[in-house]
Length: 473
Ligand SMILES: [Zn+2]
Image (cartoon, rainbow, N blue to C red):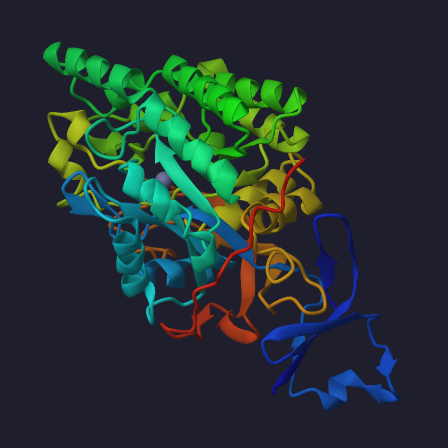
């Protein structure tokens, strides 16, 4: 097996940082050693196959993006990134594992949907991947099928309180699925927005001629996120199901999660870069149809109500535990433009899988989170939350050699022309200037990105079976 030594860098974990060299043998990390130390009389720099100089740089575990939708069918179209293009873009940005969502549609067998997603991803991915299972049709048969998921290496499933007639589960279905989840050791993930109420508001706004993208954010009011979050928490409490609320954007929903955690309940929340940086007014409310670029659900929130600041604070205080992207890109031409004259027909989603590590690092630069917290919310907690810890999310002997060498003195300009590798005709982050740069990325010991060059191949990434949730605090 080929050996690699990463020398001279500062190794950063969720709990600290220090100078150390990282020794990799094949696909695994075998040791962290004192810089320059001789091992059994040998200087490792002379005996290993490859030496990578990380002087002046951070050496961190590869990012884990636990919320992506490659090739996701939505609103009569399909997310623009495939498993091939999306995972390659992820690698460029220092993410070495994604957890995507297999979608059980209404009337479909759960097992068949999972197989469909395996077929889409197999042999296509640049980095390792796993799946959560969306249960879009809770019934006796799908509840039985849920019990088979841990045996398939799937330890989490997702329900929707939004999108009536598509993915929506009513309260009776949620209760039954949570009971099964609690009983089976599956983590319940929830899209928490009151979909039936949203649909009424959508209809009323359109009838008043309010058709611009901005009104997507008005229809999906924060009250309906707070209410659904509270309802999900109460149903989870009743059933004893651990609960993970995806893409939390409203500060009032954060408060619901914090209150439940203070009562000792196992509830967790994820937010996304768009809810930390972007707003209802500045992006969704952009002139003309431009705001369509930022139509996603939950929606961007008002900057006047300081939802963004509250989300940063919640990340600091662990009221929110991690950051994923909800990567679900659609092009403006031929996809988003289906909603010209009717915001409800704009496919929901933003593409960020490539930028999560960089965007969250700006929180370190700005003094909003520590360097260690950056690693924790982007890699270590996702690994613990979703049953990957030990293999992923940590630089320790025995772990997969998923490693990012990050240059804090580097610079990254984000833009559709300049840098990005996602399969999109625009960037939701156009013009963002990043302090920091992903220099080198290793996926299971193989250098896949180095010096602004992609060295990987599709099919490098493998399906990763997951253990049960390990994050109960
Ligand atoms: Zn999503």
